Image (tube, rainbow, N blue to C red; front, side, top):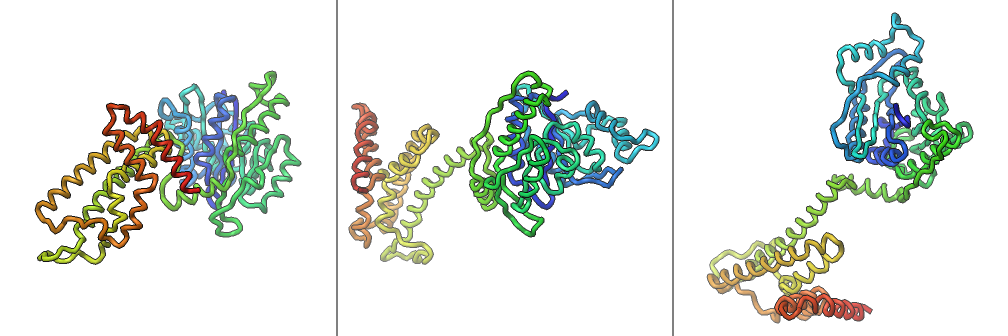
Length: 451
């Protein structure tokens, strides 16, 4: 029924592969290019022999993996739930226990099939391009049952500590082994010597973090590295004729670029600090663009509000109103120049010229700045008309006047002035002159001054 069966031994109690939520879908997405239907068994806590238990934490982790896998495949319809049958029944048939002496595990399966309720530990995802990924959690099964399921698998991707008992110690499955601490690297060497087509994660692609004890710690491994190792193993198995879809046809898989593990560690630290998930999901990217745009608008509005507040802080002679609170600093000449329309326009030009999306929204941002500045000027004129004491003094009277004049010579201010002039001469080709002549000239002058 499936072109590939995979065993995933992912520890989640005391040791967590921190990239697993996005890493497992990435691996499955790339494997599905060569294997359109994949069955995945996800290991978990093991029950005593003959027992079947339910582990809440394992099930929550399983469904989290399912949700992320669904997003990765851009599923065209919701999850499809399947009863335990087919190859699962074949695995159960390996057990020697007869129906008259059923274990609690098989009794539970029989009861589930009689009630026709969808199992809580199975999900099937149908991709938009016809891919089929079926995931089954083996959390709460005993070792006897897990060995029967693992016997059906083509490869295993598993931790090499206690999680490796079923796939590597008992079933000797080829695949990929990883570890959370360099002390376990000798286990990798031992499996490589004893199991054909087995590959271990390289030391430079491991970084341990959140260390609490010798046995409790989390770790980073680039999922691209694990996929590449799995591709190595699968190609070798295909050459030996051990993959049913590639017994006669050669299998040649692509490889992924592997980012440094330090980048994943920095990403995790940033997400932990900001409480914001950094994702490649298209919805997340679109949301981040909207946040960036709103942030720019807020900066502009904040600047206008800041100028208005500081105008109220200037001491007013012969005024009966109380003095401004001491917590508000006095406005400076440099801040006055930063409130000029030329400076604000130039700052917006530089900020939005750093990305394609910035160029697209630049006309809207510049238009907003111009209209907001006009409105601020009208509000200022109205307040001065009602109370002449609110009029700002001349720039020459400020202590930092000479220092502030340098702001008028910076690239930001000159770009804004050139844009304002281009707007006045738009009918005479002002914008063309600004883009093809003024901008290159000002940039060259700025570079020469920096030298």
